[in-house]
Length: 114
Image 1 (cartoon, rainbow, N blue to C red):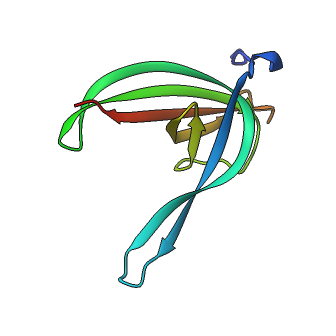
Image 2 (cartoon, rainbow, N blue to C red):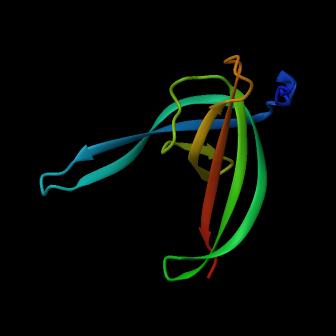
């Protein structure tokens, strides 16, 4: 089995902000979710596919993205990545080549279009 393609460090040209998901309990028994800034980092963000969907009783679209950055152990599924005014929901994270040098994230962005 061959190693996945490891990007040259010079291709990490997109500045992104990592946002940590924080859940706090409410007095009424529910919980509230907020996202607090975790870090700024350089990454490579690439859109993969888009599809139409019904979102919030209206037409919407979901766009999947691939985000590659230097390896870090504090980012996990459920967190968010802010990129050029768009919020990307992190669905999955994984070590790109098993050497803890790059982190690959599968993300989605959702928008209501009408």
